[in-house]
Every structure is written in C-alpha cells, then in structure tokens.
Length: 196
Ligand code: GTP
Ligand code: MG
Image (cartoon, rainbow, N blue to C red):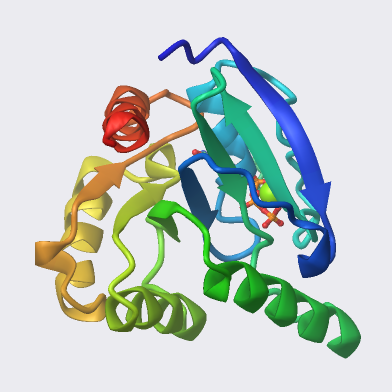
C-alpha cells in the first residue's frame, strides 16, 4: 500500500450526503483538539491534507481520505467542545450517529485519547459504545512528546483503571511531532485494509 498515494476525497456535513463507497473504512474518533487531523497528516507525510487548527471544533464535517484506491480513512468531527452552540451539538450527534449506525464497512475505529490527561466522560462514553456494539477499535494515545518518561509511565498506569478493558485493547503511543507510533499505525492500516 502506497501511503503517498493519498487524496482528500470529500467532506460531508449531512448524513444523507455520504455515498456508499464499497471500500473498507477506518475511522478516527476523539475529542476536539486531541490531534486527529495532525495524525492523519503525519501518517501520510503531508502538511495540510487534513486541516489542523488551534481553534477547537474546526473539523465540523466528516472528512474522507482515500489511500491508494484501496481504503478510506474517515476523520470524524471532534466531540466534547463545550463552547459550541446547542444546534451544532445536535448536528454533530446526528452526523456521528448517522455514520455509525449506517451499514458501512467500518473495519476499525482508532479512538484517540490525549495521553497527558485522564480520559473525559465523553471519551469513556465512546469507548463503552465501541465495546457494546462490538465495533473493533484500538486506542491511540496522542501528544506523547509532551510527557516526560515518568509522566508517561504514570499515565499508562492510570489508564489501566480509568479506561474500561484498557489492558485488553491494542494501544499505540503516538506523537505527530516526533513521529513516534507512525509505523505502527501504518502497519495496522495496511493489515485492516487488505484483509478480505
Ligand atoms: P478537531 O478537528 O477540532 O476535532 O481537532 P483535531 O482532533 O483534528 O486536532 P488537531 O489535529 O487539529 O490538533 C489540535 C492541536 O493540537 C493543534 O494545535 C496541533 O498542532 C496540536 N497537536 C496535535 N497532535 C500533536 C502532537 O502529537 N504533539 C503536540 N505537541 N501537539 C499536537
Ligand atoms: Mg480535525
């Protein structure tokens, strides 16, 4: 699979707009600002494929990226940003729910968690949802470059009791700054996309 052959496919703001694509999909889920768009740019070695902003809540659409005509990566809008208007929150939940309950070939969810902090209530709710619906998922711990070795160990230990089933879930420690975890994520995508 050629990770350089990636293109932005489309953005959808309404569930009715999302077409049937007949390719496996891998979705990125996480709170606003956790680093979803940065991760997508890093694994494809592109600066601005996915738009990154310091203003939370920027990605308000579901964005599809095509890799080498074999699979789609799906950047879901970030949740948990308190300052957005109520009508945007409703739009967000109907968009996500519509996507997740549609009959799509969603092979894997990468659930991103900011490694610096305990998971938020929203994070736990999402993880519980993946477990309940038996949706295959892994956990990507982001912004690892911001932690010292000691802080890293403390967090990894804390997550064991904070995140349900933490020890049974595949995990990747990731940094969009240092590139830590990039190869691991690429390898996972490759296996998931090619498994027929
Ligand atoms: P929404 O689109 O709002 O849902 O956010 P997002 O999850 O796509 O986050 P985004 O990639 O836009 O990153 C948010 C902020 O965190 C930006 O300022 C990034 O530069 C920063 N950031 C993302 N990943 C990392 C990382 O691994 N390390 C560091 N130090 N900063 C990061
Ligand atoms: Mg984003």
